[in-house]
Amino acid sequence: TRSTRPQRLLRAVQQKAIKGDPQSVISAIDYFCRHSEWAMNVGDEKGSILDSVVCEVCPTTALELGTYCGYSTVRIARLLPPGTKLITLEFNPAFAAVARQVIEYAGLQNKVCLVEGASGDLIPKMCQMFGIKTFDFVFIDHWKDRYLPDIKLLEECQLLRKGSILLADNVICPGTPEYLEYVRNSPHYESKYFKSHLEYTKVEDGLEKSVFLG
Ligand SMILES: CNc1ncnc2c1ncn2[C@@H]1O[C@H](/C=C/CNC(=O)c2cc(-c3ccc(F)cc3)cc(O)c2O)[C@H](F)[C@H]1O
Ligand SMILES: [Mg+2]
Image 1 (tube, rainbow, N blue to C red):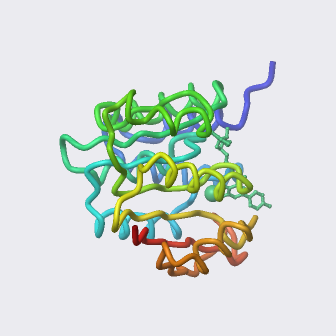
Image 2: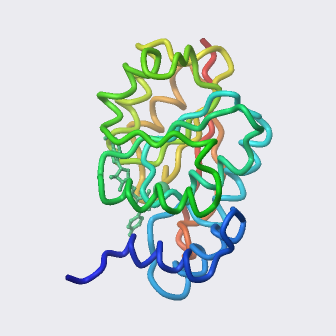
């Protein structure tokens, strides 16, 4: 049977990147998506905004909603100091399988914990599964209509603390109107929009950075 796009993306990493070199894995995926097949990775332009926010926050605990092929997982994990963990949630087993191999190829398996399952089921289990009290940083990039319910769930589970940073992809394209309205109008968040472009295109998109105020 025909290979899937994630499998072809993984093959591009295995053929073009250097094992153990996260930057070469990132470049191999960006090259593949620009010159062979577009894929919904956060990409290089929004990815450098992601990098700068991660470096500014220096999270000790980080969560990613929606692993897909692991591109943003590698971008985030490569910047984390030793001893910190990025927990990434992915409910599609085929995507999770590809992501595990991408993360391993980058040599970052010791900084990443990929959990297969739905965010709605797993978020309430973060404390019992990992002893996590609160997350310093959350990167949101899964189904766009799940951004808002899932941050409300993070609040309910008391997994956010004063100063926790949420960074959401695609707030313009495909768009997350309910999420944006909430974080921009809620007294519990201070929000800022980082204008950019949809990965590998000239279409406008951007990231929304929101600080939880408690
Ligand atoms: C709901 N709970 C979930 N729990 C765990 N994993 C999940 C959950 N929900 C989804 N996943 C997992 O998270 C991923 C989902 C990513 C969705 N991303 C997009 O749709 C998305 C779309 C575009 C896009 C823009 C323009 C255009 F013309 C076409 C596409 C651009 C982007 O950057 C995106 O991120 C994965 F696939 C799914 O299994
Ligand atoms: Mg995205």
